[in-house]
Picture 1 (cartoon, rainbow, N blue to C red):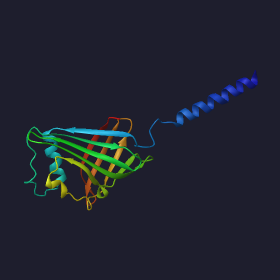
Picture 2: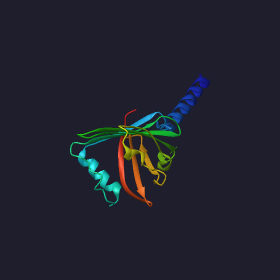
Picture 3: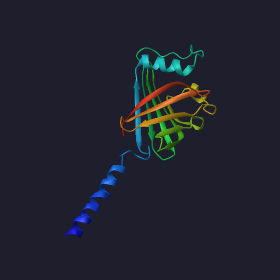
Picture 4: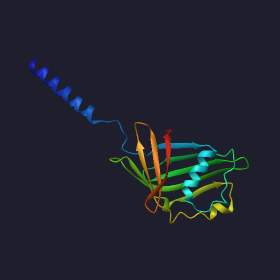
Length: 170
């Protein structure tokens, strides 16, 4: 009976240690999806911050415009970035593919924007063919698994200019 009690206590100790060591946080962002919806005012502020004071006269966001940003980590190395922009005149859908790396110990994602490619744009407008990401600064995201959020910080010359907070949907 003593051996059985000792074995039971040992088994209980092992189960307790393994349960305490597991924080149930994923070790990868692969097969997850994150989204953010913006109304007109949020879009205007985001565009202003991203422009960093550059001339934005040619870039007007009409009232009633909404947008959905989504990041779909479809593989361990690449992510789809989808933009669904709905304006009163014309809806625009754009899909980009970009490489990323995920660091599980810091729960951070490095988005390699300079390596991005446009996969599709609807409708095909000449302005989209002129987009060049080769000199874009990489962006860093921070995953909060408890709150199911992904905060992406956009930087220019090493300084954060704005952040985008997305909610996990998958």
